[in-house]
Amino acid sequence: MSKITVNILGRDINLACQPQESEKIRSAAEYAGQLMDRIRKKSTNLSSEQVAILACIQLATELQNVKAQDGPLAGVSYGKLQETLADINDLLNKELKTNP
Image (cartoon, rainbow, N blue to C red; front, side, top):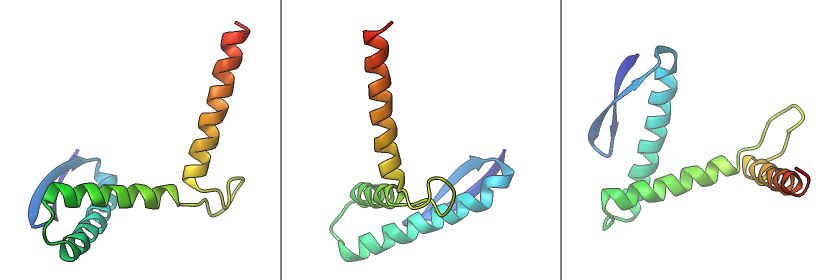
């Protein structure tokens, strides 16, 4: 395990990760930190917790809108794929309960 330190909202945060993941983690933390800084600048009356919650919601929204670039899922958003898989799972569970 590698230990890295990232700075978010002026706070140093120590993290442990696999050595090969350290740059990805640093990059993700920098992106999250920049997002939180933008939120804090726009809404100076928010607590750090509220800023973190808003950033989390923004990042989750971005993740749901990510689309595959190529392959059989090209153009399909992560959110849509997740919904479709949940629907398929529900259908399979219903079928298994009806025909054990």
